[in-house]
Structure formats: structure tokens, C-alpha cells
Image 1: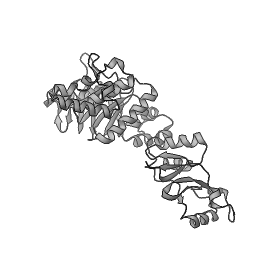
Image 2: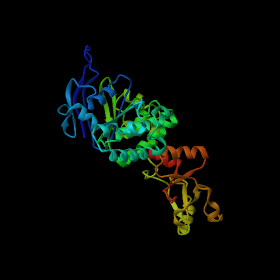
Image 3: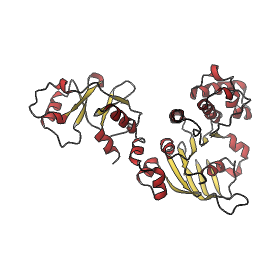
Image 4: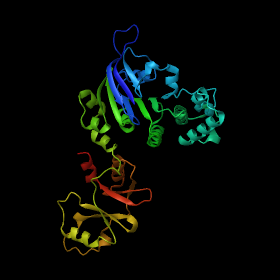
Length: 368
């Protein structure tokens, strides 16, 4: 979708390249995050894509078309752009701010209003409550939502996002990150996202381009960068707690290696036999117990019971059961186990049915 080929940028009056012989291929529908320290060239790289900054050497292709063969105004109208300060027009209403590009494209009024309503719903802003207000009446998080809606207004295939959540407090920032990822899962835009925060990069990116001194020193998935940093710079950028970061990349529903679940009624004989085998050396010494329609009941620590133990099966179940939604991450599951002191947590679907059972051992295995 976006190809950056041998691109170099040298600003007038300087003999040092801000971006040097950069090559990057961004696939359709993915979020590519440019991350690195201030001055590494990430924002310059992003702004060259919509020709807010012209490159010195090389070329950039969007959908196989050289951007310098396209009128820059037409190019920009087809690319959504979100910045940290949102760039909202203070004298426009929220409705008119969102409608800026459709107005420039001369859409008819009904189509514009319908699109604005749709987008305000998408970013969780009530149309009746906010459409006629000015930006000064909104919170920082609400302004950022309007900025995202405006960037999406003409349904561009590409979005450029320059530190879009950087000025927000941590709680609002995390909330908007999650909301935007939910939106992206539905609309599948091709996004170039600039940040200096490696944790944000790991969370938001399908691919991450780590930049240093105008060059991409490593390009890959968050998992690849966490597990195999190519040099000391990337290793230091990622930080020492790489295992915890890896847990945040895997959802509970994706995790395949989990402790077993036994269903009651139905699995009594199998479960009693397993307890009788006294599997103290087994990896999975704790098992989940589910009832009818896969309702979580609790767990049984197998290591507590020896052969011949007469404790009734139902009395061995530790209750109440802990649950976590399948869309949450393994890092979230770790937090649940730490905060409660329990040995395991059920992964459940939207209906609360048990999909799997995760223990601390399973979390360790997931990042080996």
C-alpha cells in the first residue's frame, strides 16, 4: 500500500540528512508504528508521505502511484491526518470540524450530515449533545475523538497519526488506544503511527519500525522485536521487562497452551483417575472445572490429593471461579492472579462460557 524507496531528506542549509536512504513497505490494512527518540526522523518520514515535507532523494508510492505525480492538495484530501494537538478549528462547531474534508470534496449536505452522525457514533460522541458545540467546550479526550473522526470523514484508505494520544493523561490515553484498536478492527485502514513510547508502539502496531539517526534499524512485528532485538539500541529501547511486554501482546483467547478443563457432570471418572495417578510432576497440576453449558465452577489443585483420598469430588473444587474475557491479554490475566492470590482464571466468551483455564505456569510457558 505504501512503499518508501531509498528516501533521503536533507533540510535546506544543513549538510546532515534527517532521513537517510530509508526503505519501508507498509501493507494494506496494517498499522505501522514509527518509534524512536526525538530527532530520529520518524515525524519527517510520516510527513513526507502526504507531502507536507518534500523528500530530497528517492520516491514514495501510495497504491503503486508516485506521490509526486499527484497534486499535493488532492493527495492530502485522500489521506487522513491526526496530530497530538488535534488541530481543530476553534471557531467551527464539532460537526463542521468533522465535515471539513467532505465540504472540500463538495459532498451534498445530506451525505455530509449522515457521515458526521455515523462518525460521531463510531468515536462515542453523542450527536445531539456535541454536534453544535465548539472545541473549547470539550475535554482533551473528546477533542482527540473529534480529530480521529475528522481524519476518517472522507473514508480515506490511509491515515497518518502523529503522537495522537501523547498529550492525554494515562487513563484517557489507554481508553482511546483501546477504542481506536476496536475501530481499526472494523475499518482496516492502512495507518502510519508515530510515537516515542515503545509501550504504545507494542500495543498499537502490527509492525514496528525502530528508527535511529534517520534510519530504520529494525522492522518487524512487536513479537519479533521483543524476542530478538537486533542491537543494543533496540534492546535498551524495549527495556528490561520484555517478558511482561510479551504477555501484553497475546490475548487470552489466542493462548493455546493452557491447563485442562473438566466438565461436571461427564468427566468424573477421568478426573478421579487423574487424581489417583498423583501427577505431581505434571506441568498442569491445577485443572479448571466447568458445569453444564460450560459454566465456570472453580478449580481443583491436583497436587493436594493422594491416591485413595476420600474427599468428595465437588468438595475439592476451589470457588468462586475467576473469569477474564477472551479479548483481554495475558498481562491482564497475570494481574488478576496477582491481585486475588488465586491459582487460575477461566477465559470466557461474551456469554460467559469457559473457553480455557490459565494458571501462572501457563503464563510462564507462553513467553518461553
